[in-house]
Image (cartoon, rainbow, N blue to C red; front, side, top):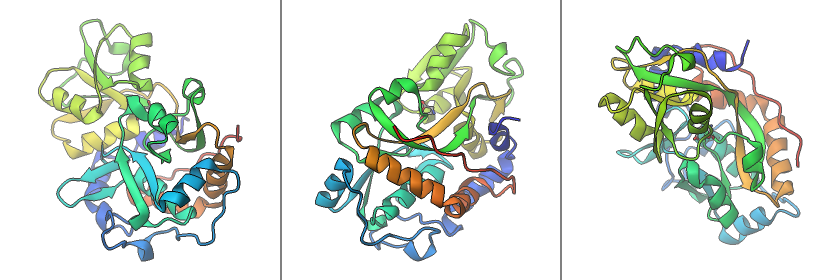
Length: 300
Ligand code: GLU
């Protein structure tokens, strides 16, 4: 059975409840004028860290802060509450954990929202130190950057209007359907390659969801973990349909020349199963469904 089934079987109600309670779950959610939340986190901020031969870590030390690329419109994964200024989600906590492992707490993290299409370039340019945001490890991306991880596995799915009985899965898509997704994502490419549907692209999935709610597109496609978060926000009008139709292995994007940082993060992930589990449980796991942390790939 595919691992993504685990996510697929999270009830929407459970995910909705999670989205609402994430701030009370003991995970850090403030962006840190008080530098706070450290006492509640399942990770600790390391001291006396060295990452020999890591150009990224050298840059971080010089700046005395870590700049992390993220998503901020994906509830449950990478989300910014614009009213409170709090960031939450599984990816955000993974990012906080990695920063802490380098010795940088909440008050020394600069989160930078970066759209799917701009991730590789931001890493290549050094605009960010690393990226944590539903970022699938692919051979094409590995030509430009490296990935630590994977730290999570999900699969591509479809989100449709609650009253849509016509679209029931990928194989039901026809040339009459308009499917929306993010530019530069594996999701949009797969729809173009493997279905007759028409496509519409935006920078963000949340814009696609707005279009879907307004009847401008017939479906939104991306990873099911992302779609479940949107469905949970508006269960009266949205639903996910069908089986997942890919395997998306989420990695931490970092500079290609930085095998030292890649190995460092892989070690943190491998040695931190209990931390990973707590991060999963507090962000995605309140339904009680078990999930296992994937093994990391070899460095290189
Ligand atoms: N995981 C897929 C990707 O990396 C889709 C989600 C996203 O765009 O972040 O392309």
